[in-house]
Structure formats: structure tokens, C-alpha cells
Image 1 (cartoon, helix red, strand yellow):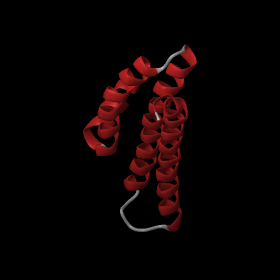
Image 2 (image 1 turned 120 degrees about the vertical axis):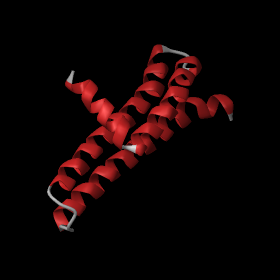
Image 3 (image 1 turned 90 degrees about the vertical axis):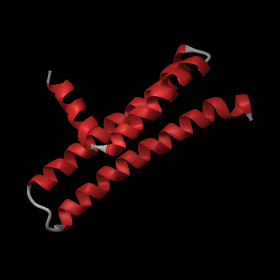
Length: 107
């Protein structure tokens, strides 16, 4: 129940999360189709799920910080920047996984 409320809130209030869901709706099935083994499929699909999961965590950090006001505070800015960096690192992981698995096969 709580999880569904969290997913709904992310969908309604976070455009980045919606974009990642749209991409996953296309790339998730593609990863299942292009993976040649269970491990490859798990890596291709799982890397997309990881991006969405970290985006949810990043959004929750931002929501808590905004709860306490919009004024700038160094620690609040640092927390938001690190949350964003975590999403970026997982996006790099996504590209790396897809590139290493599919790159040699198709290029």
C-alpha cells in the first residue's frame, strides 16, 4: 500500500521519474528480448530498475529538504547534489551494462 502511494507520488510530481518509466517501458522488454541468457537479461533489465530506484531515493531526499524551506543551506545543497550524482552514476552503469553486453554483438 505505502509503496504504491510512493510510486504514485513520484509519477505525479517527478518528471524525471516519468521519463525513466517511459524509457524502461521500451528498453525493459527490449533487454529481455536481446539478452541471450538469464544473466544478460537480468543485467539489462535490472540496470534500468536500479536507475528508477535511485531516482525514487533522490526524489525523497529532495522532498524532505524542500519540506524545511526553499532557503539555501550548504548541507541541503550538498545532499541534493549527491542524490543527483547517484542517479547519474546509475545511468552510467546502465550505459556500461548495455554497451558491454550488446556492443560486441552488434558493432
